Image (cartoon, rainbow, N blue to C red; front, side, top):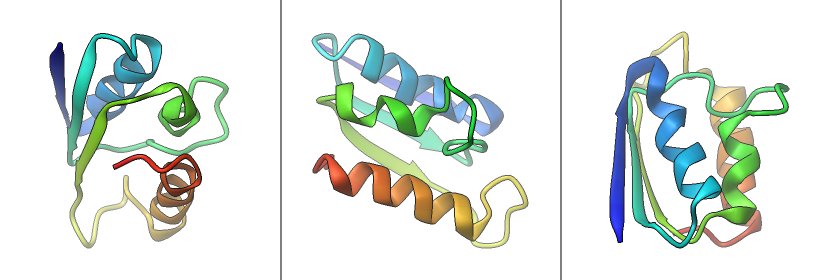
Length: 84
């Protein structure tokens, strides 16, 4: 089993990897990630139901790439499928 860590605008890659290969990842972390819950069909939040990894997110309080609406959308997607 592996862990995935991504930084900045690539923060979603850890989430996508964990959702695409759920049998390979136990942890996926995003530090200062942006665009984690968008309307795009490949948005990282859409991979939450497929992931079995624990998710660790770190974001700045005042960050234009991590607005409150996106944070709420991401949190809702993770909570709906009981992601840790």
